[in-house]
Length: 109
Length: 115
Image 1 (tube, rainbow over the protein chains, first blue to last red):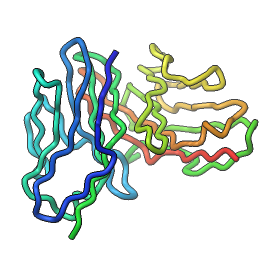
Image 2: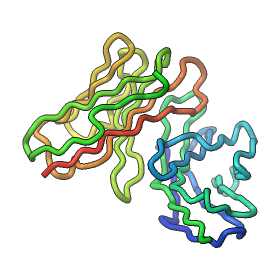
Image 3: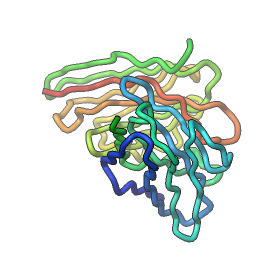
């Protein structure tokens, strides 16, 4: 079974402060991890995937297999980062994408 | 179309009634997913289609839920004898054929309220 845990329902930070959204997973095989974001009144969309090792909108995430974590980080939060963030997991070659319950990020001006 | 289209965007129904939710995926996307988004529960996987086939229906909460896909395109999620706990946003997503990249393209959802 695969499971994704996002321990924080809500995270509030001041503009310019660092952000870390936590994600832990449980999966026996080789996982593929993703972060999705949903801005207010917009569709859920892919933010980044670990396999690409990319930085999108200043966000990065490193897969730590030892700690089974895939935390999302940004050094300086912006107001436009306020959104709902979902961590998701897929088994290699699997169709199923399992989502966490999400963390609402609120950036205080 | 430009993206995944879902209808209706909002549906209010009485307990015990049947409802149908429709999803129009992006043209050429062979994979289609239904998820349910409830307050505080995140996204709950319901069913996955590859073409017209649904290899995994295990996420459907009960036998009141069913889904079909025709012509490898439009999908309909049907909920029979709705209950108040069925109230949620039902999200449809589609994905390109080929190697699973994990990139799902979501619709705006159908918000179902059961009174």
